[in-house]
Length: 423
Image (cartoon, rainbow, N blue to C red; front, side, top):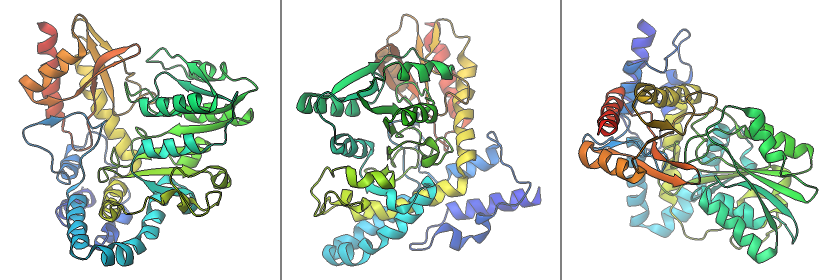
């Protein structure tokens, strides 16, 4: 027990401290090598209560809509405040001559987390910007076909529809029955839409409406075998599932870093396979638009340097927790509340309880009750913040805990669902 207690004490000290320009590993070298035999399980509440201290979690509102945007850790908030104040004192000097020089080390850190080359990683503001850059930047012509799902995110669907209207490409739709735990079903659903005119398949790794995990790797493998490029929307899977981007075998990838990486609001990442970069046109003007340099996609002009620099502290916290441990905890929390309400009369789950097919997000409905009414009552009466979902065949309430969420908070959710279901 001694190594475990020592680790927890060090964690508490770490999460309560903040030293600018000093990363966690330098301040606490023991964190780089967790003692052997120390294996925090998903329900080790001693450990997770220390993690909760890293966040300024509201003591009055139970936030269970982390699927939309996640709160920043305290250290990230402090860094953001510091860098904003710094830039406000002498913007031109501190932005362009000081902070601008730190982007490359930050790119290296993010690339290491993604398991990719830094020369394939581009910073932007969110998954919409990342994926729209790729969607509008691909060389497609009239008659080319793109396979996508009706459960993809609306901003991406609308981007593809705009290309359809502007360029005459053809959108081929996959209709899914969710939830499902049949891998072959998903792969066949996409492959059945492929023709000799198919150029791109758009894959949402985790469907935001319900938390359904898709077998992105198998779909991408099948697409590659047929000469079809694959674009993965990782907005709800990056820093949730424990994987590296190249393991998906896709060609293009975009995500938001203000979701489960808990970066500052307005941070995102785009990944493009190195040999594909020169073929993608930047969304914003660049001096060499057909360059193979990933930085051509960062020509935003004046932007917020503070949010970029503060992102590093969110990366540090994620690395300290560990991707595998984080994924297991998020699934544990989802399974915790869902398993306790599965006997509520009239309840319906739009999310699998299996760890292969879901993680943090859970979605439920109650027969005879509208999602909006349930979500409204959860907040007005119990101060539990969720979001109602009505999209295609899903009509439920989405519940998304985070690593700072406690089982006690989820017990309140369980009690609230039981009360609502009994009325």
